[in-house]
Image (cartoon, rainbow, N blue to C red; front, top):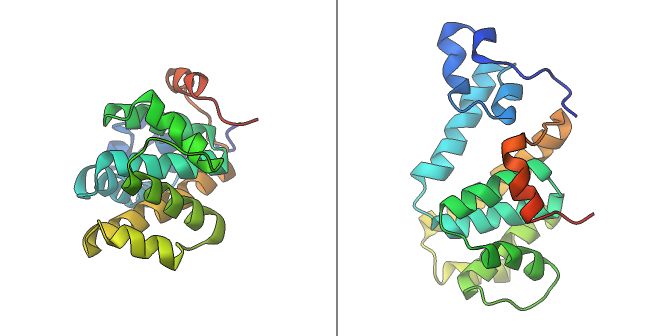
Length: 182
């Protein structure tokens, strides 16, 4: 349950209304701090549209963070976004299997990205062996991008939980199709 009321564009100064051009509950909660919301939005926008990281790899890493944290909001949103960027239901389900230590048909690079996300989310850092293996296929730029993505979403799930941001009804079907563990 939300700890803050969700704001609408009419609740904001005219020059801050751009914060809610995508009026999802996360943005509506962050709008209580317009400058913070704008800074947050710049990083999120760069991750989605500016980074040259493979979008499917990026979304799998984000889903891994959402799965580990059991964040309904993060998980449901990135199930949808992942599908928008080409992830299949089987690839989304592979996040669950990989987390449980089961073998999947994901390419090695995707499995390594999931491992990196698990390590960063649980240990605070990526293991040297994982980093080394990933860097065989990713440039230094893409390695930094991947670390930024994982670190950012480790923070996002904590922000969502701390503010009690609710899943919007339009995203609930994605959560229903790919439920989190109980």
